[in-house]
Amino acid sequence: MKADDVNLYLVGFMGTGKSTVGRALAQRLGFACVDSDHEIERVQGKTIPAIFAELGEPAFRGMERAFIEEGHPATRTVIACGGGLVVQPGMLARVQARGVVICLHASVETILARTSRQTNRPLLNVEDPEARIRKLFAERDPIYRSAGSVILTDGRPMNDIIAHVVRTWRRDSVEFARAAGAAL
Image 1 (cartoon, rainbow, N blue to C red):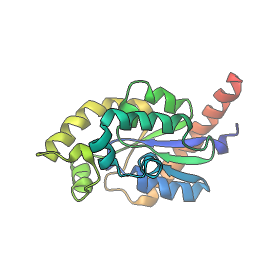
Image 2: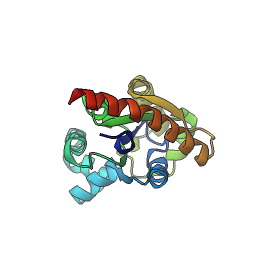
Image 3: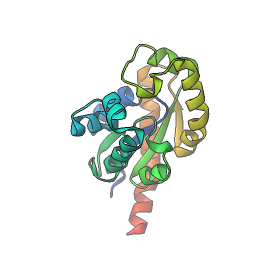
């Protein structure tokens, strides 16, 4: 595998910009862009909130696992991963085995501002969404930070974020391709 073909996986908490940054990155790199949540919705023919309500969170997490294992191209793709995808047991290692992983990070305050107007987040469909965000953030942040390079999206122009992610991906994809070649 050539470094220029290595997939880029964006992980991080909800509201850190994975979908928005993913689309812009894919355009910049000439890659396809796949959002795991949108792809699961497309395949299932229902929204994430409907999947959670009808089938439950464990079923959704199984759909995420299937998506990572076989639901997207193996090369030249930017994958915006749902916020909970890599926090499930074994999933971070599965994603890291498939490409470069970069964590997008934002402060809790920024996440609150970005998610406050959205209704498609079933984990925030609770009495106190801010308390839920703070609790989930505290639980998940150590996993995100161990996933790969961490890039802050708070208060930064999109062009700066994109340039930083591209530089990081270019550096890490060389190592990934080298390791993948050595494994063959």
